[in-house]
Image (cartoon, rainbow, N blue to C red):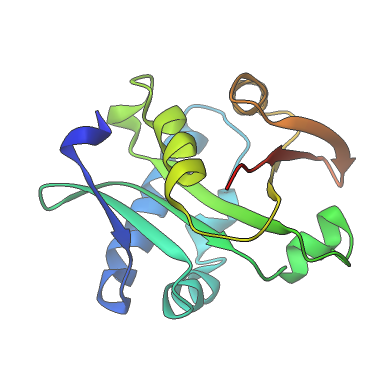
Length: 167
């Protein structure tokens, strides 16, 4: 699956394409009664998405010229990360945001392959990969548990997860 794809850092020219893809995924989730990312449909996070591209934290996955997935990895806690996880006084984590795969590719193992790719290819001196998702999104919660993440609890209806990185 990923062997046919190219994973690279996004550049600012990719911004519109990434935002459009994330909104399409958010709409698909809403259409399928999945409570996740509804705020993206109204432009919530557009500026943050563009800033993460400028900071060289966002990656895209291309199959030819088609964008099939995206994700953001940040070693700097956002306001949201601090709200959900508390202040990372040790500075030992990478935060995964907006891991999205086009719905047409769901169920093919791309998400698992992307998590594996991050573990094997993202160069960092951090110890943990952390993320959160809406607590009542049971499929996504099960996905993270099945892929080696440990449940850390809940804050504001968001499940918190961490996975130890092996560098």
